Amino acid sequence: MKRLRLLLLAAVPVIATASVYLLAPEDSGAGRAGPDLSTAYRAQAAENAEDAEGAKTWAEQTRSASYEQVIGDVPPGLAAPAGKELAQQLVASAENSTLDWRSAYAYIEDIGDGQGYTAGLIGFCTGTHDLLTLVERYTKAHPGNGLARYLPALREVDGSDSHEGLDPGFTAAWKAEARQPAFRKAQDAERDRVYFDPAVRLAKLDGLGVLGQFVYYDAMVFHGPGTDATSFYGMRERALEKADSPTGGGSEKAYLEAFLDIRRAAMKTRDADIDTSRVDTAQRRFLDEGNLDLRTPLEWQVYGETYRVP
Image (cartoon, rainbow, N blue to C red):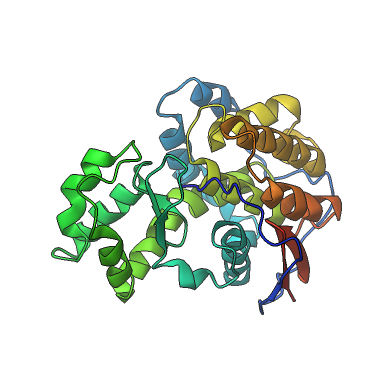
């Protein structure tokens, strides 16, 4: 789940480039109406905000049959192959300081953020349950893998920054397992199950275009799918209190401005010195440019580095 990036990198920007397919054009109006949703869906927000299982409820709700047709009528957006590739590049620029997101499968280190080891392409953490869930699910499908022997220790350190039972061999075991196609596929699947799919589906239900879908996804990755004030679902509820979503008849741009304001404040609440450039000079830049469809070419800055996708 998310790394708190505290350090600004070089003062002189480094230019990174990569090829990506052009996203299909969509309506870029600032006040598009969004899909027609039921009253029950709109009322779910208040209920989930009070529910300790709210994050799980939202994820299940967006997969329910009652919304399949609604989501099916919306363009693929970020879920299209080109959109998903671009999303991974954007996240990797902030999570791993690269556009080559596939190079992050073997990544693992303790970055001193109180979440233990951060690992893999989406920043799974030993202290935030998602890394444990990944290894449990992978071991169920592939018994005897190189990480299975660490499951007792992973259960013990879950929720803490402890390395007890993991050192000295866990980091080497992770890197070795990351050479296995099955483990890379497992990381992809867990990223999609926990972060990408719920974020994109809910963004579509809120009437958001490709940029808004990415805004939700990146927030889900960094803050985690919780309902407290600094987690994704909690921030979304607060944003809806400040501005109507397009589904609620509001302006898409105004709603995303409110969401990004709340997200930036949540990042600062976690650490007053944290670098917020993934919001300030990336997502906010796209929004200020009116690029609600996240059309390429794109240029943005994160941690003092400049990235470009042609």
